[in-house]
Length: 308
Image (cartoon, rainbow, N blue to C red; front, side):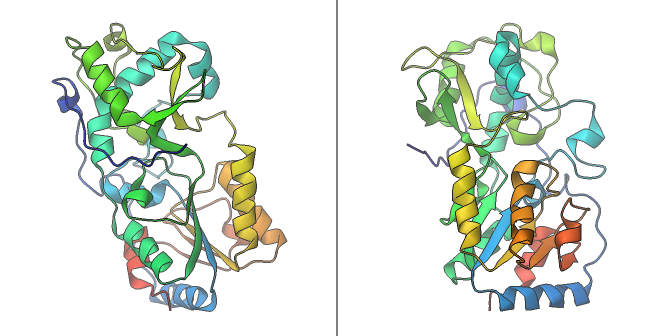
């Protein structure tokens, strides 16, 4: 069972302190879009009839969600913090406690983010029959909120929670209510927003935070997302390869493709001699595989291109 949850936030006194970030704050500086590149992209889109698209964090930064790698504004540029590793989450109860405390504080803001022009444009392309399939590396549910249906969430979705014991899937919003009930007197001051619903929080502040077990079997609860160091489900990877094989061109939108889980599909497209285009402000791992690239904000670019 898979739940696509678009949920309202549950606020406690502590969670209301989670910092809010103006939309666009996490988008790196970008010069004006080259009109010739735009025309090339329009020609590229017009030629294809079954477009395969891959979206990344650079698409959601325009909705106010920070990413990891954007120059000057991503997490790696702003701090020495690194994302939770899969092995650390599995082996360490204290690491899970710190993770969930930060996630609890960040959830009201993270869950309230809305789709931007890029998400809406891709939904329109799907409605017009141009977009055959969309694979997103994002876990923010914004494509689902925009109404996208031909969609694979490659790295899962932070709006769902999975039990590592019995595999039960539940809504993240329900877990937020359980956190509130279990921690009525817990207070902490959240710092700046981090990617994937995380916030900056001193470790000492998480020491008294209580994390509930799975209601079905008492097992460990984890966001249904692929943490760093973990692997994407093989069946999901094969499904995406099948959708790629049904397509006639690939468009990368807002992803540096530094993570192999997404880059592998560009290698497969190259092997199939499929045309590739990229929309991204910064460099990507697949620039050498693309026939053309537009350096610009995803929403600005996609709202100009017509799915003719």
